Image (cartoon, rainbow, N blue to C red; front, side, top):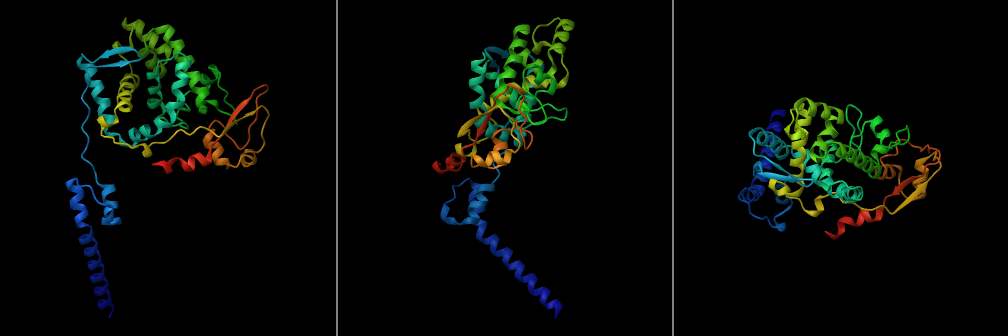
Length: 328
């Protein structure tokens, strides 16, 4: 009796699998053929359509030259071309990071670009953030560097950022970007070359100075550097290529795929300590989690205000966020 029941269940399972295969077979054939699938074909067809793997993208060709921050960088040497090719391959097949950066860029760049312009830093320097943090506002490294620009604690303080148990302005997009501009301009005054400035952001100013003196070269592209800093420069150049032409790397994103920048509903100026940020958030119709998402520089459930300092707390526009995707 038990054996008969087992055989019957097996037959039913076999028939069910066969039925599903037969029903979805036309969709699979159409998808493989690249045919546009009609909506009325059924849910199973739409699911298959969304999960079809596209042809593996080819690595973009190495350009003859790239203009970075107003300077033309030519790849007319074997070593330069090979180093550039390595990063092109990494970006093309590192789908997770490349895709997330493309999505985040529509939220981050509109906020950063005006700050760079106001502070006299070339727009191309924004690509340092892509290499430093993958454009994640809350990124933190094993060594303790934090934020989009990945400032170490002491360096952040040196450039005017507050770092305390309840406040860490390395996560404040506006303030950390202004601090980065100060660092970059100070380095440019020393090196007079923006790519060398970029290299110093990774390898340290003193490290680049020593290598320039030892190797009797002025530009970082002509220096023998540690691998991390050497790759860093080429990754910045490839990042510029990626953001300017994602399709070249095999990425086809629509507007609805991108993470939007939605300005805050209001900005509240606070000059006194707040003992309960959850209660503060409720006063403005949002949750503590939503408050922290809009203000990642808040690092605790309270805010201990520094003497004589005013903080700008962004109140997210929850209604605008809900309605954003309705127009697609």
